[in-house]
Image 1 (cartoon, one colour):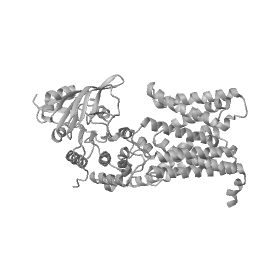
Image 2 (cartoon, each protein chain N blue to C red):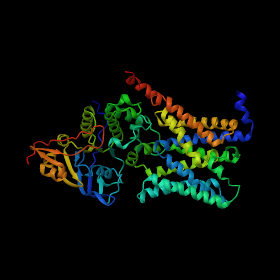
Image 3 (cartoon, one colour):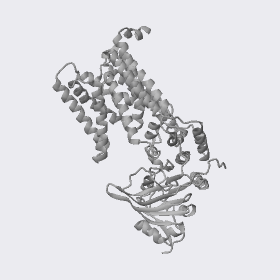
Image 4 (cartoon, each protein chain N blue to C red):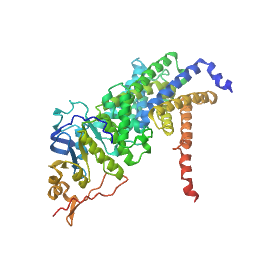
Length: 285
Length: 276
């Protein structure tokens, strides 16, 4: 049994992949807690897809791919805000338009580059086994910045998420705080690129946080539980990926989804079985 | 009763020629009124009269198209945070994972400043405000567990924790149980004794007449602003409510629905006995 767990880790690419996946799982879950509570799942997905043209442009200009991705993700988030504010269309419509547009632009740019160095499938679905030492350092530094911001701005982000009206009454800069949150989401998406890819990062943002939401009644606890679930899903997913030869990003996301379904059924007080049992006497009559 | 909070500096509020537009249409048109320090003002008017808009303008949530708001005779925005606002309960997500004491603590965030954690004094203030609103036993409960009346008390406790000079309440008497109404009225008395200026919107004209020194009758413009006896005349009410007002056997019935809520009964206040 023990050997089943240790055997994949003899390979350094598995060690690096595992470490990166755990860090990404934790980061996605913590920031994802705000995404779930503020109903920003669709926005997160759009930002993830907006990375694609950023990566392509950065590649063509021979710049840093991470920075290109970051600029593109933040740009599309602000663009959605702009269209919603001035263009008199609803936010989900603005997201729908820009989401498809950026994805198409990304695919168009990458298809014209015609090179194998920039592999579309790796960007779309991740390539956890290709994590380098410098990738690990980047993830760790950006991750530390994200976590530190979440901790330092805890009360501001809490009040602006729970009650924006109170936040404005307290003279908090609500627009600035929203933008800070968008930048945090963008950073997390960018560091997740290598692990789960553009296509699946939204699931890592939403699924562990939503699972934790069913289990807890306070935000800090929700973040901790989500982080634990995200890390666990990454570990279990990578083992499944190793032994059953499944694409790693998909394995991680499917594991997180299984956690969600189990909790959705059995969560104390809120789960499906729990509510069914509470209602049972009514039917037994 | 514990008179724990010290007397605050009473605020005078001056609203001068304020116009607020939503998508071009004026929600408030040239509204002018002044509230002397430590007075209680009831804001009444039909749905869509701009009561919530007025409150949001006073707390700085909506930009003014024209006019100015002065607090302590200082132009709005220049003074310290001293205005608290109790919104209608539907405006927040009650499934959000926070406890009752977390929510009340948010009232302290304004005076805490960036990067600071709440200290002992903040926790004491929160405990006292929970106690004052009779929800201390719920402190550790998630807000999702609360009844409508309890939610309202938590909002009020949070506004108290802000230690405001001016407190604005949007429809605090709508859709809550009788004990919560009573608790709210008791709180109004306590705050008056502390010198806090209170501005409260309500559908209930009888309550406005009984518990407030001034009534502001609003329908986009100020219809009347004075003592309840002078404001709540049949002529003024007809001007404010227009075709929504019916006069049946000397009683005025206002055809007016409360905001959507679990209590959708129509409050039909019979104002004294108004002669046609």
